[in-house]
Length: 398
Ligand code: PLP
Image (cartoon, rainbow, N blue to C red; front, top):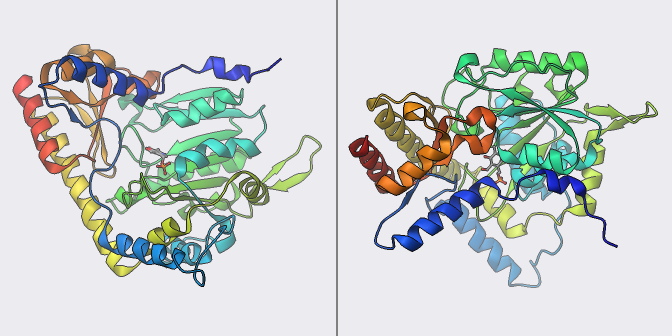
């Protein structure tokens, strides 16, 4: 008889965005004449930049010739991409990372979810609340116990340390969904906590490219001591429009160790390498060449223009909502605006109201965790026309 992983019965059936999509689908089916504008799921809308497209075309042509064909990729990624990441994101910024600590992947969702493969079931896990749903769901799937760390206006979205000492801590900054950040000093407190308690910080920096203020760290490895205590996840999805192309990378420092139940010390870098080489097929050569082009001067100039375009959308949304008297957070160092719902509405009530009254879709804050109740997330990843139209509709309706 088949035995299932019982922990799957502990997670809800509906992934947040599936439920949003279901409600929108049903609305559209019964109102085919209405134009629905989505500022909901955080997917990109702008074309991939020319430098990347050119590199992909070139790599495709290489695949058409037996002399330049590439087959199976190296497990941790091609050296050309690892070196480009290392130089641009770390060495040039004075951040201590080495080439064999960078693991190319198909994105941060896979890596933030799969990292649990190398961690024991009995780890006590602390996760900020609200959070990107993958952290909570994948830990529940593995049967781990979770303590949620509320991030609310009362604590300026800076989580307090867990009540019970955490073995594993998920931090995501710039944050999805709140759009808030930690200063260097605030992040240092977490690194110091982790060093003191021998905890592991899983630092999701998927939105680091959107940081605009100088005292906000792009990488946890800017903080002294973090190499002994943190793993960092990065993504090309929002930085360079790769949500459909799929590429990201994870940094696992060689100083990072954990103990077996017998007290033996193991390297997490070696364990992640082992995990990836066994279970991960590698990111396509063509995609890795595209990612490499992100780091060329033209690639950088072009992606910076797209990021500026999205951040201008963020400004339009934020100022439009604030002009109505709504309280908002984020939208300065992150492409998300976290708005307090009006009149004490629940997140889903506000979702339904916006959908039914003005056909604007956002994401209900409660879908990201209980501390997200009473909040609503708007993304800046729409195109300009839709963003302006959505803000206009909201202003006319309220
Ligand atoms: N981490 C956070 C915080 C995200 O918001 C997302 C995507 O929305 C991801 C990771 C996933 O990134 P990727 O597309 O690289 O899998």
